[in-house]
Amino acid sequence: MPSYKLYYFDARGAAELARLIMKQAGQDFEDIRLAGEKWLEKKPEMPLKAMPVLEIDGKKICQSMAIVRYLAREFGLMGSSNMEALAIEELLEVFTEITTKHLMKIYYEQDQQKKVELMKEFKETGMPPYITFIESRLKENNDGKGFYVGDKVTVADLALYNTMFSYKHWMGKEGQDPFEGSPLLGEFYQRVASLPNIAAWEKARPQTNM
Ligand SMILES: N[C@@H](CCC(=O)N[C@@H](CS)C(=O)NCC(=O)O)C(=O)O
Picture (cartoon, rainbow, N blue to C red):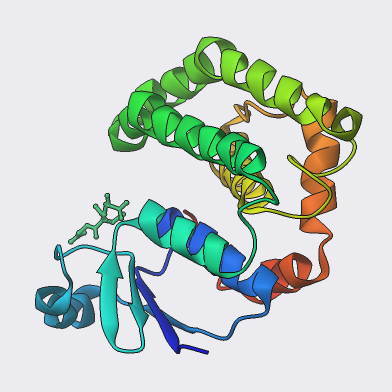
């Protein structure tokens, strides 16, 4: 079994899905959180001078979603068929699209009042088509009462849970959590949050804003 070190800032951010995969799989890893001087010291060693970086037996690999896909394949979380893998990839791409089309604008807005207005717009018009899509995919499997695909947990479940957690603890603080109107996804969230390894990590992980 290779040894894993995951380098990132002291945040959930672009590293948390990789952490969740390893936690769900029961895989030990070093959760290295760099800040300030320590990050500047380490930065030249990173392939693209950015994080997250996963070090596998001494080899440093960058790009968060490549890391996620590698770990998901490695730990059997990429579905049980090519069709399941396709639905999983589809959802991962949806989250990438939402991030680039909507979240970056909100994240980088400096004016707090404008930021909340952008969150409201995202909740009211940006996110609803994606929520309808996610709900319909979820309902295609076990009437929405189980996992995102198939009959066991996959990286799609972890990615959706991670996104919902993040919105709840970010936009939710401003009363703008776009998922709060979906009971189906609310129940789904509780199912994933109750998985023993995920529940244990949610308690044990450093509490960070993002
Ligand atoms: N496409 C890359 C983006 C990596 C990236 O831009 N990471 C940011 C943090 S999320 C970073 O390390 N920035 C460099 C810095 O802050 O010095 C990925 O998904 O891993």
